[in-house]
Image 1: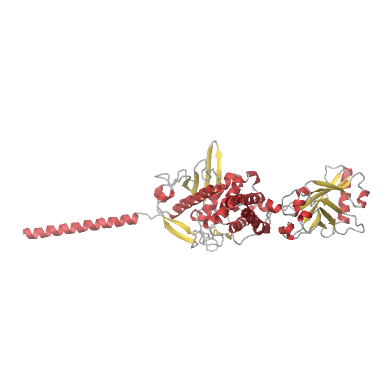
Image 2: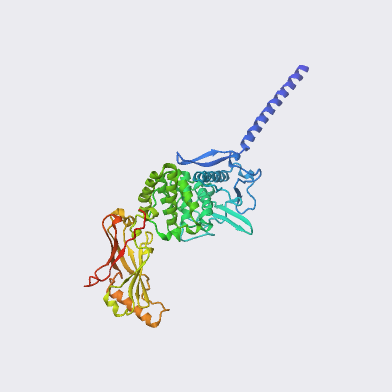
Length: 532
């Protein structure tokens, strides 16, 4: 009996041990399944595609053991007052990707700042930047709509601002959306900018440019273009806002993407007041600059130009001049003055000028550099106008205001006490034709009334002078303008030889005005105080 009892007890022990081992192993397996894997979407520069990359939370530089707080960021869900708890961050691909790329672009600007020689901590702000995920108003067809913009705000930046002694700055990233009711393939857009590195880089760059260009510069053409440039540069890929650079973009029927290496045009000053007219010109031009000088040098010198640009002078032509100066200074320090001068001239001729922008280097090579720098008055050589101009009959030219950005010569016909404004608009087909190096001998222009309502005299004039003004207007219209176009051809000749240094005077001749060869022929002295 004892033997049977012993065998039974031994069997029970073995079953118990096996059951315990199974339970232990099963418990370990359960724990392994419960343990969340922390991954981010990272951009592989060489393969030009996204990869899923394992990360440790410590790599994000967490500054809290309970909430999603980084060194310079506090990440919130929607409009919550407190940051997201860490237990919600673990295993969350979107939240981890956002923090990972915020740190990445922040580190990039720290490196750029150091290479640029800046002593300022450009990536620190008066208080932590609040980052809102699933922001409810950053983009919604029902809450935000702008008929001028085909690509609505999927993310936005609220730059650093002070209110009652407290500083605040926020980045908002929107979740996916679709049109109400019409939630079909044709109308649905699936995108979450919090998982898009290009969108994250773009919004963060606004914080940097806001420091130097002024907070109200955000949303203007220059700041938007710079943000797109750095987004593409950090990816080292010239296409933005597509499934290639943002895995969250699944459908593109309603996504306005562009390639910086293809979409380029000609500078139009109108984009300064309304950047919606052309989203791509500035970042595309900066990308061409990058391709000429190299990625690292471009990133550094563009940042230098940002830091040297006054908030009151943040328009693009001024920025281009500052950028060319930064390139010359940086290259001179690295490679010597000869190399700096050579590459700066290449930049002018291969990138700036063909697209209608100039730095001082090009301006000093343009025909406008030898124009008179003061206003000049000449007696009007038209004999017939003396019939109603008894005491004064002269033309007053404002040469100093003519430049490559605005190639328009303004002048007045002064008759007694009345002034009638006229303009001559230069007509070269390409800005390069304004350079002496293009074997320039003359410029063509069109004489026009300065105002579209030139037939309406200033009501502040006396009745007598209003009558005189209308006499002058009708006289010019009837005797000098072509009836159909209300214009007259003008040509500016540069006398003195082919060499720009030999230009002695500028001769202006109007098209045939009758039998008198003296009519409307004027000569102006060339100025020689420019550096070539």
